Length: 137
Image (cartoon, rainbow, N blue to C red; front, side, top):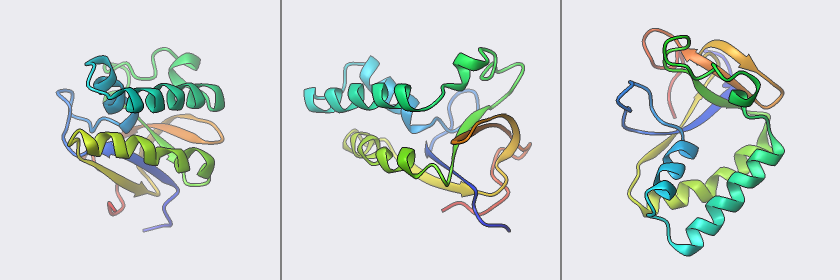
């Protein structure tokens, strides 16, 4: 097992499509359902705006990147070097915890077949087992 190159924050329950939703999707879902307090909503909105302004959205570059038929189970992972992005995740984790949405941090050196990559992240189609080849933390 190599050194972890990628990190993902995700829910602990699989979605109907079989993947573990990421924390941004989970938080967005709470916001859409109107479940966030005013303070949580302000953090969520400002956080999403910051991420939108500070790193690429792979689906804006390739609208088919998350197409289930083309790339089944595709998920995004931060590169461990993207510390400025990873450091801001804590507030999302706090919101999810306040709503009893279980999350975990997963690290891997080989999370799947890379279908998109930039300086800060990758999008992968997980290996057939649907779990990273490295240990989960």
